[in-house]
Length: 367
Image (cartoon, rainbow, N blue to C red):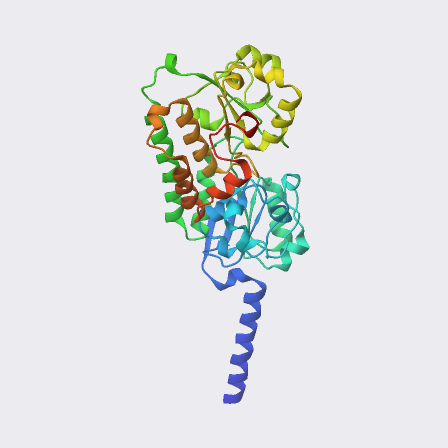
């Protein structure tokens, strides 16, 4: 009888181990969450094995210092390693992980590669911009919790990202870190706004940002009416004067007629602008900013959704150039590494400089 009991005990333990392997959620405490589509999802608290699908998902996990839980990566991360500081800082730790599908902008709101996803046995799938019905269907099909996140409207700074961050923080037991990241962003915004609060509009120069990426790289005509760094220092953006909102293409004649005092160039479009400058130098030299060398490089922050740390770095650079007296205490290399170190755990300004050049300096073809 004792032998039978022992055998039964061993059998039950083996069954339990098998069940845990097949259904990781049985191994820990379960919590009920509401994802960003309003779906009620039961997930394991503080899971050990997670995957990130879709635009910007991995970035949030790195911000929450939980990249060690990632067990597979999209091919897009390895194929396009530049322009995304989270990957520049942490890609070396993650690049060896197995593929979980192609990823990239073309995969938005599409069913992932189920075979590759199932092969890595995640406890939880984090994914951005997946419709509610598709998320329900995916979860039902593979039997793994699917948590949908969002950054809000593409190309903007939407505070829905705070909700996504808090949601991830609750699941990953990183609530304190989530709140610290949100505080850092808000304190940065407050500092920036405080520095410019007393500057009268009459003392503010007109500015313009060109070369903004939008489904690919573009030249000087590509701009954004609510460009975040300009918004955060209350700059006078010439492209904001019209009725159109969001991303727009401003033709060269319009840029000439506006003739902004200062022009900023997004690093993602700089190569196209350099080539265009070589072909149409007379146009550029007709602009006062180019003639007077008041043209400055910024880092691209719209790459696989918004790189918030780079938004902050760019904004300090913009403020220092437009209002030098109000930002004279800011040393950009130090400020950049302060920001990158907080968000990503590593100072990567030198890597960004190698990719785009020194932030806030004239492009090489004007030096």
